[in-house]
Length: 171
Image 1 (cartoon, rainbow, N blue to C red):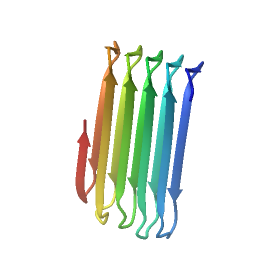
Image 2: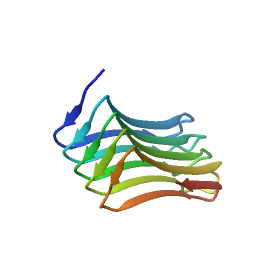
Image 3: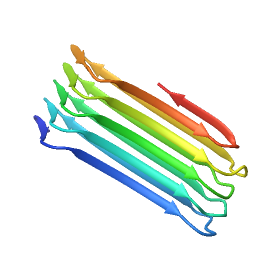
């Protein structure tokens, strides 16, 4: 059990994957941050969780990106910077599919205070008419048992673009 977690400074977690040539495999990138404290979570800086997957392969190669942030505190969560969770998946050639998922969960037993912006984005793009599917999902979940203060901007965006079957959801 951890009483309180204090992070002084910015937090950056990135994952990237690229497939090139005539490959038939997949590019998969997963970035994940889990901060869980019995009492308080205090971050005196920005939090960025970024996943980027690109398939430049001419074969049946998929691109999948997932970025997740989970912060839970028994009492208070305080973040004094911007929070960014972003997933990008792109298929530029071949018959593969592109899928991107970005999720941010903030759960506090008492109060949440984020003094910066919260941005959660998922972009899935195919640049070929042969791609099989394109899907993007972005989710933001915030729960505070007592008080919630976010004076900055909130942006939750999912974008699926391509000639294939497209699906996008943001909540």
